[in-house]
Image (cartoon, rainbow, N blue to C red; front, side):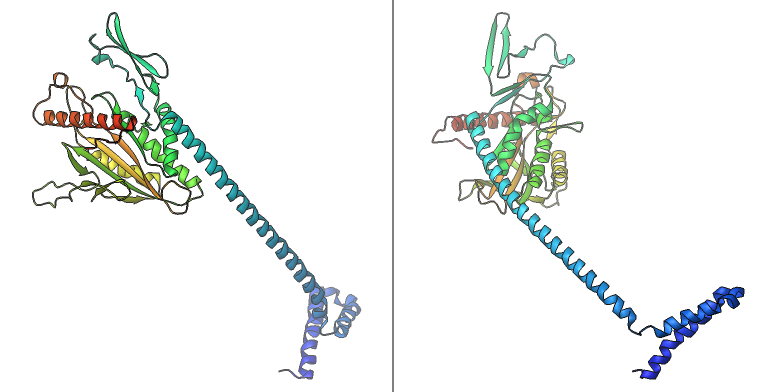
Length: 388
């Protein structure tokens, strides 16, 4: 602690140094301004020692009041924004409920099972004058020329002409994708003869993605834009010669390699379908899902036939399982969106298949016949559906 004399000496030291500093700054003019220097030093001596604190107190008080006022304004702004967020969230939930109702009514009116027809353009090497022309009459009907004066008309929910784009096809599929986020099970598949472009419609090419890639992108985008939390898992398998094969599990290449677990279809207690031992990989964005999809496509069974250079020799099934953690209004907590690229039906006279290719064609035709019976029973709402 300093005594009163020490404090006085301390207060004088700066004054003495100030006098020297002023004189040194004035230099050769010091003899002219010595009286002015003495006056400045006298003022410093007479100033009260706590003058600085007397001046700073009102400034600090003003600053404290100003800061308090700004904090209060900021707090009120935060409360106002929080109230607006709550109101907007409630409004968004209301709009989502209305959207779900309208979408479900729309799908019910158009039917739970909808069939589209996409006419593939005929390539020049294929047209030898023997192929019968298929023409789109309008957006719902096609006509097939059977003979010179004979034709047959078929009706569909939607007809895509040979020049239709992948965008046009996906535009008709998108409502089903939206319903999947609301808790509805959905299935989209391509059905038809071999070489008609089913894999192109479902898988597409890099510069023109198909239904699967576009659907994945749409569903993850809608999930991000939604105010709910979703968990997705991805699975992929094929049905080859009547057997199930997981396309995300490495297959044995040597005799000593471990054999993957056997897959079997089971019915769960709620009436849904489960596949035992099928790998389900969690995915958080569309890039992860598409990487797995491309990986699975590489392991799919394909071969060259007289009808198609890269013919699918199996049925490919892609499953995206969707679980919503915080939406009690959904139809179900977990639902599944299936994409199926079926193997094409074949005629032996056309493909001239033999051996392994012939067995594959027979298995494909048999399973497609069974699938046709299932669809017919579902459409007619029969009590018995002949699942196989």
